[in-house]
Image (tube, rainbow, N blue to C red; front, side):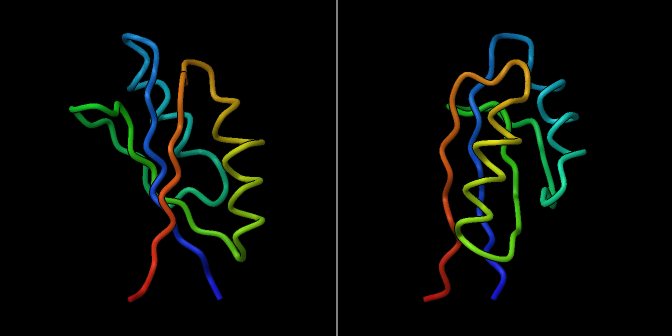
Length: 78
């Protein structure tokens, strides 16, 4: 079963475009967009399991230069 999530990202001032561009190149990232509001970038990611999703966020996404905080929101099918 595939797990999808939205990763809400806050960046350093002026880094949103760079963070979104770098995120697009990460395997498992489906889409990454600069946005306005309380978050600077929203990433949609997909993985084979919740554990794999966690590894994607911690070992790949959070290491992108310019990110100050992430919030991961797994998609649920109600």
